[in-house]
Length: 501
Image (cartoon, rainbow, N blue to C red; front, top):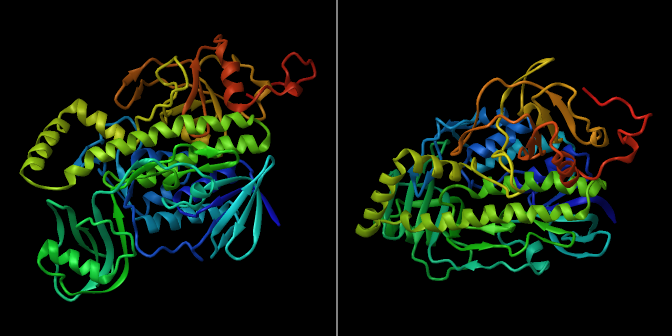
């Protein structure tokens, strides 16, 4: 039996991002993926929101995606565009980039980190005990992991086999998404009717078209066929435009569900395995990637013995509320994808409201992920929020905050007098950086906040502590998030080396 510290079921965006985070921390991680290559038939998600671009920037790989996609204002509520170009972020925009290309680029990064992948096979079952998980594969092989992460989509076998409930709301609408050829010139563009949103667009090769079309919901459960696609097109346009030779056809609904627990023992869930919803708003892939970044460093510290197993409880505590909010926001948008006199009147009023400055900023921050706030206690307004990517002044020259996070290590950023902090008991885990920042501190929605004397930044880019050099809460924050102090580097030990500068 082959062993790894962590086995990830599913090599989509969430699974690959989690693998990359663990590999950066030196964890032996492997992916099990049913596809023999990263190539995907068709593309589901169509873009990245601002916070996801920031997350990639924190790892030094955002430019790879920006070079392939188109930066534009993609944040929106029920199709009502929300301009975030005036937001205090280095990336006040979204990125139009199809999921298949996103996966290819992300896979390249994961390969650079030498993460092994067991391709062309599925996880068919598992059994966990006090020390690990035995994972059964479809080719008869078994893997042994200390932990198993289910990133295997909305129909997650891992979630079902773990016995984790998946409560929520049953579907009421159904849509087909496809790529195919048409012998007649279709009506390109987007339209709304009483059954939902319909769209036809020409693909890059100039031969095929991409189609999203609603169908009358009647409890469909089987795989969609060309006949289903033809029937749905005729119902909307009165013709199927001679649709033929589909590359792929898929069905999605507005089923909305969330795992009751993101963890049971040594089995964890992330991405669509933990939450599913209608794709309006484009938050699915983005939420999954950010699940992975929240979980990765915590799981790495537990595997390495740096932190106790209880640190994994904060993954559920922080990410479950985020997805619950996404689901409710999504359900609020779904009716507005349809069109009739009453819904059109409602959409007009919502559009007028979102045209006002404060609602635009609030909803823009929510939809782009820039307003995420983890409840980790009272204190400075930065606490539990994303750390801004400031242009710092250091003794070694100018330095961006996100550059400090490229290796996914925590950072104590000292903005006061150099030498004011002694973190030698955590020096093997936390980087201490002395710097200055003369500009104002500004956060989306909140606006300007008081400049802190120092900030403790987690590997996922969120602030774990902010305060003065004399604040007695810093050791507690260091212990809570990055493990107990190392006795071998106790500052009372006269043989202890000088702290790094």
